[in-house]
Each structure stands twice: as structure tokens, then as C-alpha cells.
Image 1 (tube, helix red, strand yellow):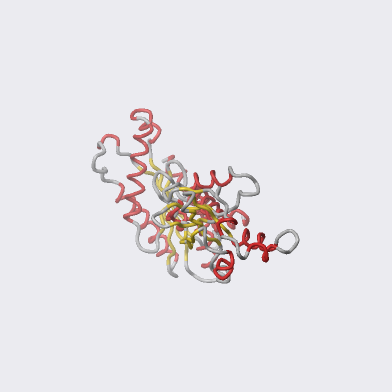
Image 2: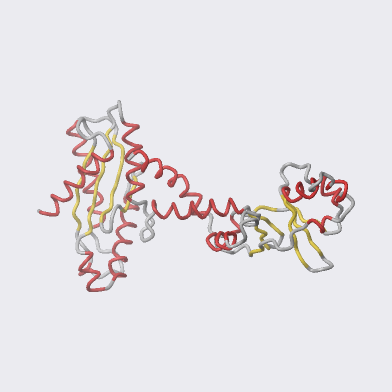
Length: 314
């Protein structure tokens, strides 16, 4: 459980960043461009700036673009016998450039950029990627790979259909809330809401019919939740609302949790505009809150699921 939560924490931290990074341009940064005729001695001065990791080399005579990284420059000036610096300082920088660098347009997806980078030979696999924007830019392969991993991780904590966080995110969020509430009198409340009849809707109207209903339910719950509450889609047809209640008497806690449940059920009752009333579903619900016997995220989820199961049988 601890390992699962640690993994979820890493994934959750990446969600917001991943949502903003979609194309190569999002991870690219400006890069200095020099002419191929610039002397290596001038290049030496440029690389004294620690912020410069590479330069683009424009070979106007041959109509080609090359790349010189700090590592390439250092290797050339060291040379096999240690005489590289003496040999190269008076040469043109263009002689050191790599004219086979990977060049991609800024709109290239992160997935495509990572694939193209990994398709290179082992020796060149982690070289920077040149981005042919209005001005030349560069993307580090490590940044591209990190963005790809973050994007993939975000899929496990954000539901693609409703854009709500998933069960993984729920478990992590519940655990965090329960940890913060330990030792105090605050209560963590969890409400589960199950959509009835999705199978029949799919059978009658196809998968898109059920998806339309679930998207509408997700939007309605998200619009209804009060500040401090979080909404999740925890399974195919089950949604969750989580909140932290202030220190209250037991009777008041019960009433507050029931009020949260009823508020969201009432919000779901009216038919969604554009959806026939005949197919708008009904809903079952179950709720729970932390107390002396329910202390952990697992306990709370189990309690709410048992009550949801009982509500379905009524």
C-alpha cells in the first residue's frame, strides 16, 4: 500500500505539468546560433558561459545546419593525444559540427519526438534535438523523455472520459486527508454515487450513449461540489466526493455527510439538456466518514462501498 501511494504521489505531482506539455515546442529552449566560419577560439569564449550547453551552426555555403554540444567541443579540444586544443583553435567551428543532428518541427508531439530520438544509434540517442522554429531552439532528449513519462503517468490518475481524477488519485487523496486528520477531531467524509442502468443504455444506444451520460454526470458533480471538496471517477459507473469536515459532534457529522450526499443526488436528478428524459438514469449512493473505528483510506473506502452495495439491494 505504501509503495502504491508513493507511486501515486509521484504521478499526481506530474499531472499538472503533463497537461501543459503536449508538443516539442513546450520543452524547447532558445539556443545560440553561429556561422560555420566562426573560429573555434571564439567558440571557446562562448562556452565559458556555463548556461550555454550547445550552439547551432549555420553553414550558409552548404545550406545545412549543424550542432556543437559542450561535450563535443570538449572532446575535440582534448583530442586523443591531448593536442586537440592546439590543433583546432584556429579552425572554423563548422569543422566540429554534427550535421546529422535530429531536426524536428515545433509541433511534433512529445511521443513522436521521443520515438524519433530513441530510433537513433546508441551513441547519438541522447543528443539534443534541434527544433526548427522561427528561431532555432533545442530540446534535451532527457526533457522529452521526462515529459512523455509524465504524460503517461497522468493518464492513470485522470480519467480520459470525464477528466476527473481516478481511483488511484482518490486513494492518494484520502490517505493524505486521513494522515492530516490523525490526532485531531476533523472528520474525512466520502460519498460514492453509482449510475444505474449504464449497461442497458450501452446496449440500446451503443457505447457513445453511456459515455455521454457519464460525461454529463461528471460535469454535474464537478459543478456542484463546494470549495474544499474533490470529485473522482473511481470505476466505470461509480463517482466519489471527498471532503474534510471540521470538529463536530457525532450527530452533526452524520447529518452533514447525509446533506452532502443529498445535495449531489438532487443535482443529478434533472435530465441533462440534450439527453432524452427516458434514458436519464437513476442513482444509488453510499457514504462514510472517519471515526474511532474507521481511520485509514482503505477503511473509509470499504465502509462507503459496503453502504453503496446495501443501497443497491434496497
